[in-house]
Image (tube, rainbow, N blue to C red; front, side):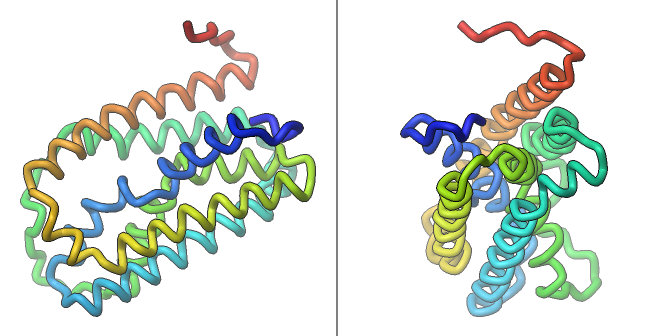
Amino acid sequence: MDFTVIDAALVGKLLLLLLVGLGPKIALVPFLEKTHAFDTETKARIGRQMVLVAVVTALILFATGALLMRLLHITGGAVAVAGGIILALIAIKMASGPTEKPHEETGLPVDPEKIAVFPLAVPYLLNPVGITVVIIASGEVVSIASAILVIGLILIVAALDYVVFTNIDALAKRMKPASLIVSEVVFGILLTAVAVQLVVSGLGNLGIITPTAAH
């Protein structure tokens, strides 16, 4: 990402990446599965806490990402490769479709506070794409304006998440289970491609390979 010139292309690219990395799509099905036994008020509370944890984590990573990379002697390329590998694991699971009963009971009590933080806030809502984008952006921002842009887009995506996950019951009534499964598989395939691209870009940044330009 080149923050030296802030234009519509940069804003659009960053917003799209954040919608993938911090938007509601990847977390939607896991949220429905993990919270199906709770009442509407509890689901909304889980949704609020999930969004809050994900956004605060994203902002902390943005504030400290560049410093962490320097302290740990890692580069943006290494972060991209790591993010791509973890994303691939999640994406392949999505693309494979459901392999077990989504509402299978374990007999153990479920703590709404815990599932809101893990796995819903991280790694589903703030997923490896979001973590990678935020950390790399932290190291590449060149001005206060570019930092404000990143923070503003994070908050815009967070507002969308808040609307979705605090009104999940109303939205769920309009969702057909079959459509959810199909969209999950399709999105999983697309995310697998994103994961591959992250790894390729990271390896290119590390000088290990020379990616060819897309035509």
